[in-house]
Image (cartoon, one colour):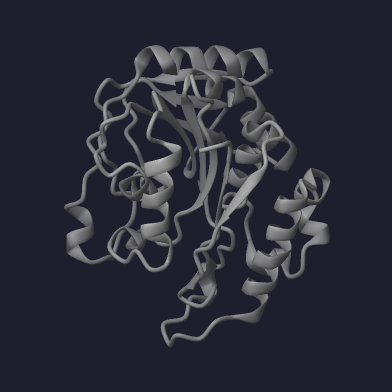
Length: 259
């Protein structure tokens, strides 16, 4: 069986589901090659933070519209992928083995950090999906370890996806078409670190990257990149350029593992 990919995808704002921009079609092309043989998908999203780690165990996880004030068509979108209760239990066991306090959550559905990018990556919604939460106290080292705990699933065809945003300062969103220079600079720094395999730089990005605090006033949207790096297990990365939306949301994404 071909080893499934590890992917970091920038999901940006919820409106990405309706406005594919540069990234949407590129994620679809990525899914057609990298996810064609996937047996299941595991997603880690910043929009589910818990005490310890929880893993969705529902056989039919609901589509959660965890946002407000957006266009009505957004609330009509669904992602009816099946769940995978047995895989959820296995993921919990792997996480516990790595020192995480983990449990199955039989009620939780998929939040927009999961289903929005999956609508592009796997539009048929025909592959089982489970979601893994992020602990409230997660830091970069913990995010890397979380990805490492899930990495072994890739050998069985299970793709591991960290869904976040390469930059995420919602206070500075622009609608005039202009771009903030700091967002581009931070995205370029991150790309250099990812391509160089410089895990130490990524772990210490808040001290080493340009405008890191401005790019991420809080860390939760950058940590899924470290999850994907941990799950990548040394594979060579591919860049999926996504441009910048709303002036400050860098949408570049990355994939590890041969197509």
